Amino acid sequence: MNKVKINLDALTSNLDVVGSWMDRHGASWCLVTKALCGHEESLTALYRVGVRSIADSRLDNLLPYASGLEEVERCYLRLPDLSVIDEVVRMTDISLNSESVVIRELSKAACANENPHNVIIMVELGDLREGILPGTLLGFYERVFELPGIRVLGLGAQLGCLAGAIPTVDQFTQVALYRELLELKFGKQIPFISAGTSVALPSLVEGVVPAAVNHFRVGEAVFLGTDLVHGGTMEGLRDDVIEVEAEIAEITEKGLVPMCEVGAQTPFTGESQDECEPHVPGERAHRALITLGELDTDVAGLTPVDPTHRIAGSSSDITVVNIGENPDGLKVGDRLSFRPSYSAFVRLMSSQYVEREVNPPLSDFPGRQVRAPRAVTKG
Image 1 (tube, rainbow, N blue to C red):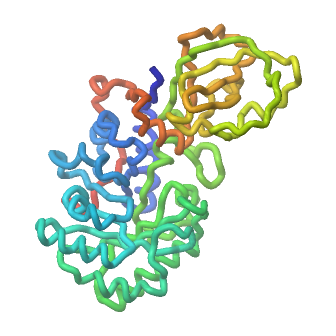
Image 2 (image 1 turned 60 degrees about the horizontal axis):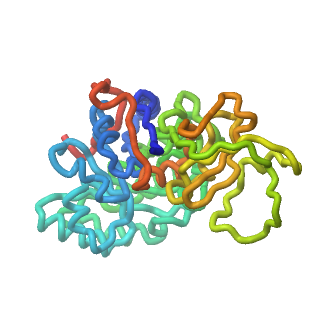
């Protein structure tokens, strides 16, 4: 069985490091757990090390925290559909919003359930995903800030998720000025500016993020250690939190150049990692077929742990890996290991065909308290 292995010690280390950056900046943050797809063992481990603020884009993923763990703050990342308003109010403490009609419905549900709800108003800063246009902000805020059962917790922004925009000091300063304008005009404090995600962490470490930006939503950097601005792994973070093991179903020495006419369309057209080293007719190597394919993950986002291995191509259910002369004597039934990109990680965790395993097992992981996200709306 193929499996995703989650290294709890590495995960704990990354949590602590990111938490230290937040403490130094004087910021609060929540851990974006949507890539875990509600995996209860991982969520339990996070709770044991002190995580008390999580964010997700699927309400079902929040079910482990829906009852019995009231001190855990839950943020709904996806803009709420009108059809799930009651569930959003019942299951979450904070939601990100950009439509006044939605916030009015959240207000009605909050009053009906006697359950006040916090909203972060998203402002468009250039990535062209969610967010109201800055020129409409005054009118928007005036329509929602006095709604019963609703507390405007902050202003937010989304950068880097759609267009790949790299946050700038000017953009951060812009949203800070919007908050000042609203507070002066309406005489009501807006506690947070939630404008930082994993893509903002390099700027945070460099000390160029304004102090006014005091809330971050971080996921990828904690789980993968990724530096989304410069590439590679951020200094101080570990890249071995997530590893994928896939079983070899066939291993044979074969030619590396197809001995047939090619040109037909294939279902999956991702580039082969093997193409960076062109082969000549007659060249041979061992090719291992693993039972992991595009139905399970984004194969292009897998990087073999062994730097001599190259992914030669994939189909729905099979990926072919060029392992050269096979110096390790790999055979059928052995496993190859890979590190996933974020897109590959998300698809692996959502696949019903891939096993998940935490290491060490929860029974051997009492957890140590680290500088983890703390709730800002509770206690």
